[in-house]
Length: 426
Image 1 (cartoon, rainbow, N blue to C red):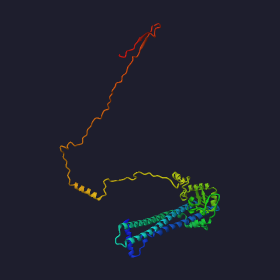
Image 2: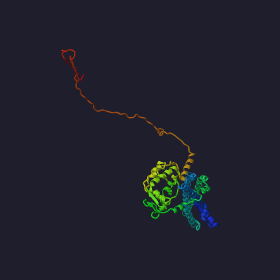
Image 3: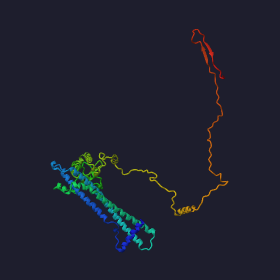
Image 4: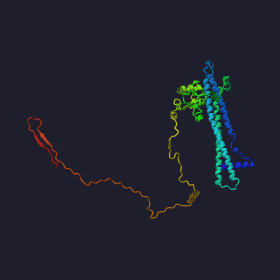
């Protein structure tokens, strides 16, 4: 960083000697207008196509048109309209990023100019400048220069993304060329999105809750359902995408906000909003590209993943308690215990190694040291022993045993009783 700042200052000082210094020459000035203009040009072409497809689908899906007159592939036209609207959304995102990047570059240019002026006032009048004073200025100058380079590279990436999106329109241009669309439109008027908004005005059904620009703060920043597309027209006109007009009134139903292309569409939708919401979800099932285009991920019947369904159906909290647990050492450490940062310590160890080359190892044994060796002794483990200090005594009594003879056999036999008890001592 320090060397980069010094080189930038020297380059600016050298230019000042030759001609007037222009700090804007230090960056690629052509990147700023070219990227923004190319994205705006692509956006105008895409919007023109979207308006033509919309007008053509309005004409072909009009109930007054007879079926025999509709010999145009309406399904392909509807898919082409979805494709163009998606391309328009991506280009608007890229254009917003390019504008933000341009603002950052302008801020960095101003800071770079002031920093260069401060450096000139600090360095040029003096023969010698303390490093503690001038080095931080060079570092700040290098940091600002790196920021300019990063923003210029980001603009280049945005331009490349815009170029990579062009093939997605080229394929459908082979099917529906400009001349073919003009021949189908004939004398039909192609209305822009702004013209459609100015034609429709007024409040719809007062029985529902409506948000108006006169009574609602931050009206233009309200999160609109279906990405600002009229849901009633999408259902009633077989998938036609018409931008809603918030100035008619924004319908608030079940904490969601809906916009409509006309007053009649708002009245019809507000009469049974739940039915139309389900019909929009059914349309998205038939055309999966509408899920991303209309931001229908919050509908459980449309979202294919249970994780997305569970996470997006819950109303987000503005505050929450969270905790994170990580490993003590997420990355494997490699600490070298013998590492030395001190140069003098390394020199001391080098001298020791050099000195060891001239040394010789000697060994001798004396009368006092010959017994100093490692000994090992093995003994028996102590046995488990027990001693008894008294003796248990006991006393017995004779067990009486008597034998009776003559109980069976003879009727008149005499019973003889014999005592067979033995004494304890026997």
